[in-house]
Image 1 (cartoon, helix red, strand yellow):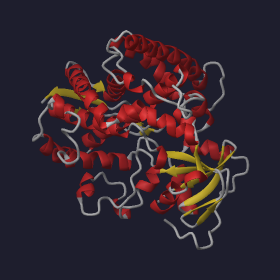
Image 2 (cartoon, one colour):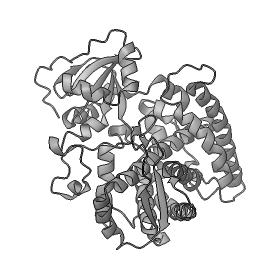
Image 3 (cartoon, helix red, strand yellow):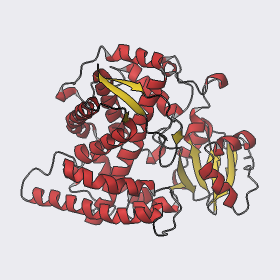
Image 4 (cartoon, helix red, strand yellow):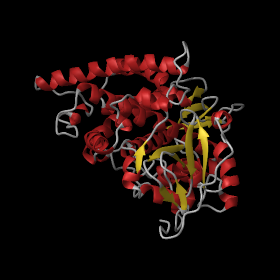
Length: 444
């Protein structure tokens, strides 16, 4: 942490007045923040969509940010706040947020993961059979998105295949509107997302009602974890309303699906682009057993048993974090890394820029997972799941899903990149190759 006894330095600012041109550049230029970090340093302020926004990178500033406590509150862009809903955990502050976080956190305990793991293994095997049966090159990104959605919908919420398919299309429309311009013009991404949200809430309400009816009748609620939310209490010690629980389930679908799908796609793309690193990982996978025993599935491929796999996952998230940043809002003036930040400022921690500060300059862009097994690791503060009291609740489930998919798929299938495709990344809502990562598939 920085020394609070020194006089803080003034915050550098871009010359933006209205923020219109800055906002356009923010959405169009993937190097928007990088260019300004080079010019203004590790902390600087600009204006985006009328909001004064401070961009931050580096361990010193981020660690100071996490230490602020009541000086900060959660914040999301208007489109995200509206589409997540007013009752959502993401939009709650203070005691409200902590109470709901405790309730939803029951879905991600070690015991809950042990319950989910066998179902995830079965979904991995289903995906491998499906891919092996394809006679033509497969756009792998779309298949992995469906897989990631199936994991959260089936393993956690206990939905059957028909219910998952019905939810998936609406969920895709909803998630693609999250970071759009919040104008509900007919046919716009935001308007389509609003319509999809209404349908999703109705579907999730029906799922919750069935679970409640089954519980009242003394029957198993599902193979998922909805029963773990039973008896959840709000900040006053009263049971959460159905509307509250449904909003938390919608957030759960987003947090457990979109970012994990992006990481799965980028992991396989990175390995296929770097055959030497894939062969290095395959040496370790050859010594692992698939499928794991049901009783051990949740820990069979953890970092102590598969350190090379852990290093690969960390390197992918270092280079291509599933989200570009996370937000906080200052409730009073604070100091970050010796720089004065006024009140009522949105602080965006730039994850990708922070990840690149630890390595030597000539090594920044290299895909080298071995760095994470070296003494001292990569030398950077890694924040793929955010941090502080709002660190991603689904982190443990995402890590389990990524490990099981990587081992199960790479031990069963041989993947080869199709030639002449665009592997450049679209960034919003999460990184994904533009041409869908087309691969040829064969059995190992």
